[in-house]
Length: 242
Image (cartoon, rainbow, N blue to C red):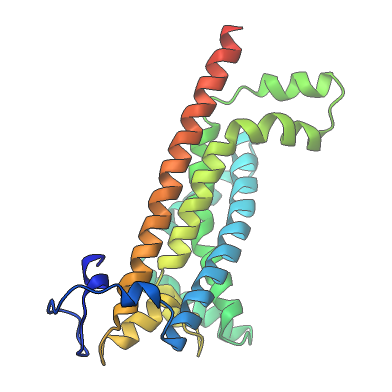
């Protein structure tokens, strides 16, 4: 993909190496429809990731801390959501939106992305909560902290690496999704939908350039997350030693 972003192609299909060029990297958004689709994907993925991270984290905290009727059912639903076929989920969401008379478009794309990414967030955050010492929260509240300040100053800093990992996973899932989005998008075009449609006529080289940018951004975020996690672990080790 990255190599063909430098290909000086002149045909519809960018599959034969014709020479080296930087012109596609100097004008990656030269195709107006492609630019619009990328903006739509980034915006919907950002909104979907934020909402699903908040809701998924709350679900993880509730299911980890409390024993309530229906907890096992909630766990089963989340696992089924992950294991279910995307075609089945897309058809089910399409039926739901049509029954509720919700116009297909950007809103339904975001709602669908939130629905299918919440279980991934909840399970990721719950894995971080395993071994969490509830005595830390109890000690903070004994010292006069409110439940909100306890969460912000005690709980969240401890589980933050898991929450951040869940948010990045949700963003990647929302940005990359094609199958479910194709059911509920209506006339709205996201980046995966546009690329699939363009394959019939020929994918422009700018797609390879934008794909390279997305790959590099993901790699940088992963490296940054690893460095931050290592720094946090070293900081906790120093505090424990003191």
